[in-house]
Amino acid sequence: MAHLAGLGHALPERVVPSPELAARLGVTEEWILGACGIRERRWISDGETAASLAERAARTALSRAQLTPAQLGAIVVGTGSAPRAFPGVSADLQRLLGAPGIPAFDVPLASVGGLFALALAVDLCPRTGPVLAAGAEEMSRVLLRAPLSKETAILFGDGAAACVVAPGDGPIAVVDVRLGSDGTFADALALSPGGPLVMDGRTVILQASRKLPAAIRSVLEPQGLSPADADLYVLHQANLNLLRGVARALGIGEERLFVNVDRVGNTSAASVLVALSEAAEQGLLRPGSRVVLAAFGAGFSWGAALLHVAG
Amino acid sequence: MTPAAEKIRRTLEPLARAPIPDDADASLFELGVLDSFGLMDAVARLEEVFGAKVPDADLTPRRFETLAKIEAYFTARAS
Image (cartoon, rainbow over all chains, first blue to last red):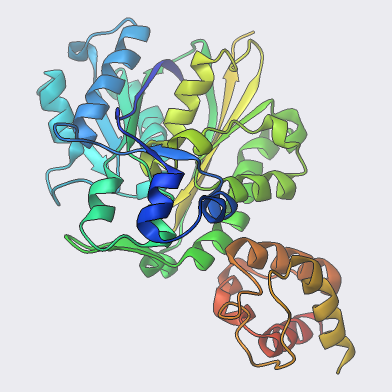
């Protein structure tokens, strides 16, 4: 099918600890931890953008894939906080990388954007050659343009991650990817140009708690696998409580979950790829292991991927 | 109180973050009885207790906002 040839991620320098946010929002740190399990998140400072973070992540991923920007066949960026309606973050990333001429486009699906970008890259790369799939967010800019809402301000962090997807076999094979969307819920998680983030949290959680386990089973079952057969689950780091709920629904122990939401918050489209990049750096993509990715985001849209690390 | 209503109260009790109201039409969300994750767990447990799967299209908070709505929904699904 295709393989992941290199991963990288980049986070802003500025750490926003939950006690600092609690004071601004008039809540307690304990309330934040109970609501989402996030101890700190990173927010961009002057000079940092989703595209600048994406460039850092992309250069790391390209270096690890032993490729240069000139060797890319396409750039796909998942995002939910692009500073312009068009062109997207992908255009800025392409300019920063110095890779003109190849197609570059955004997937504006917020939290599931990184996974959709990866899925599109898997399908594109046999025709174009290596594709850079990225997720990049500057959600704090969105949060800060309206009075901070405790429901959303505690969750989101900024960050970017990138993955070089190349055709054929390689050290991390993409075995399968499944995606889905249901526009019935388009208004439940939405961002209009210049507007505040709209999030019906209860609906998001109810739907995500159902769609994520189903998406995961949809990539395992065709391979004759059950949830217990996957070694590592790298899920969209939406909220620690949701991650635990998905583990319960799948009947797997929490030790199989990769968790970084406590340190980086919910980085939306970047989330699943940041988590995968960190898992790789920590040596958790062990030879012979099966790794499941899954995400849920605006649309609603959702998906899962099954990876197999060469043994 | 109907047997279904009693079953619902027993199911929600361990998940409730505030006292379950006597008023079956009171909002469980506004009273703080169920937060987002409590609702997620409540629906899963109610599905088991009533032996009725909630279709994805029905997974919206308003269907489960009050004890009366929960009873009406699961009574209809279970029948």
